[in-house]
Length: 242
Picture 1 (cartoon, helix red, strand yellow):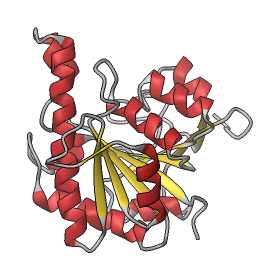
Picture 2 (cartoon, one colour):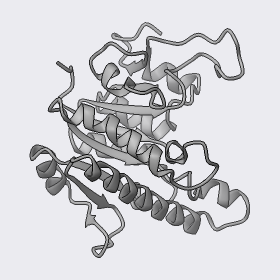
Picture 3 (cartoon, one colour):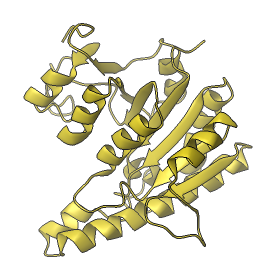
């Protein structure tokens, strides 16, 4: 069925806003949960990382005068809120989940323990990784790449609002060209904004392909997983055509 046995799905916090400008839209969370359930039902082992930008963005706050370390910790707490929201939405559709936080908060969720997380995946549970890496100055993209490597994931799926990686911003440049495949090196050299540089480098060093697709398109996650949907695969030089 799918080319991947275990994947990590990285979503921005903004995906949970729906049409709003802040916070969590329950209908949007439910829709994404349905997308995840479709994949889970095929037998693929799945873990999630959700950003916190719909609630608090540390880097933006630091630019306005917040201490960067404190702002990043606040952003990490926002990701825990999003993970709990997605846990609720997933369990409402019958998917068993566990939330693991890099910042210990035992009253709310499990601490991040790699071997325990692997065991959950083996048992068919969806694991939601929250609080990034647990350290300031690292993005949730880097946290997602780190967890994908630790969990031995076959691929990192990056759900965005565009259907792949382009040579220019497709929302601003009418003739922007979408890559079917592109190398990690080109993404880094041309600053193609797939994920931050440390995340892309970590995926390159661990040979984890990054599949960029439009999560806002209903059914696209499952379709891309089957090799049928529209996406861009960021991969090694020998496999990339861009």
